[in-house]
Length: 392
Image (cartoon, rainbow, N blue to C red; front, side, top):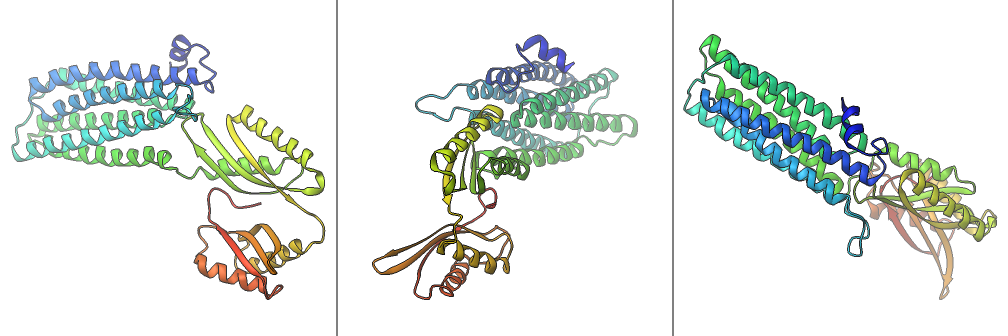
C-alpha cells in the first residue's frame, strides 16, 4: 500500500535523494496523519463523553495534539526543503530537526495531561459505561494507529527522517494507550472493578518515557552528535583508497539537516608526488563524495617527505614510545625549526577519548620523549581529542 500511495501522489517517488521528492514524502505522510488523527479525535471524544470515560476522552484529546504535531511536521518539511540563501548558506534542513523536537515536546505535554486526568479519576472514581459500539470504535482506532505507525516508519526509513520516526513512535504509543483503555473498559464491564484511572496512569508513564527518549534523539543532531562509527569508517576508507594518500586525520563531519552534510579532513601525501598531482587527486576525490553521497568535503593537504630526515626519525621515535602506552595514540604534522637559536618541535598528538591520561601529563611525557633526542628543544604540542575518527 505504501508503494501505491507514493507512486500515486509523488512524482519521481523513487528518487528520494532529491530535496523536492523528500519534501513530498514528508508532506504526504503528515497530511495522511493529520486526517486520520482528526477523525479519530472526533470519534473518541463522542464515545468518551457518552460513556463518561476520562481515559477515552483523554485518548481523543491526545489524537488532537497528534494532529497539531503532524501540522508542525508538515511545515518542518516544507521549510526544511527551502534552498540555501545569502543568510543561510548551508540551507534550511535543520527546520526538520526542530519540527521533530516540537513533536517530541507535544508528546510530553500529552503525557502530562493524561497523567493529571488519570490521577483525578483515581481520586474520584466513576466507572465508565461499556458498549460494544464503543469497544469496536476503539479497536478500529488501534488498527488505524498501527497502520499509521507502519506508514510513517516506512516513509521515515526511505528519506532518513527523524520527524517521521518520532511520528511513528507517537502512533505506536497511541495504539498502546487505546489498547489499555479498551482493557480497562472490559475489566469494568465484566469484573466490576474500575481500573480506568490506574490504567491511565500507566499509559501516561509510558508516553512520558517515550517523549523524553524522543526529545533526546531529536536534540542530538542539533547540538552535534557524533556520527555512527560505520559512517566515519566508510569515509575514512574511501579517503585511504585514493591513490597517493598515506594517512588521514582530523576528520570532522557537520550535519546541517538531511542532505546537507559538510566535512573536512587532513590528508598526508608524499611531497615527492608533486603539489599539482596531489591537488588534482584530492579535487577528484571531493567531487566523487559530492556526486555519490551529497557530501561536501574539503581536504587539507599535508605533504610528507619519504626521505630519511630528522622529522621522520623523530616521528618514528615517538611512535615507538607511544605504542607502549596505547597503539592508537599517534602524532602527526610534526615539524622542526630553529628560531632565535632555539630548536622548536611542533606536532599534534591524537589520543582516543577512552585513554585515561590527563592532557597535562601526556604533554610532559611527550616533551620528555622529544628531549631524549633533542635535550635543549622547546616543544609545542597540540592534543587532538576524539572528533570523529583516529588518524590512519
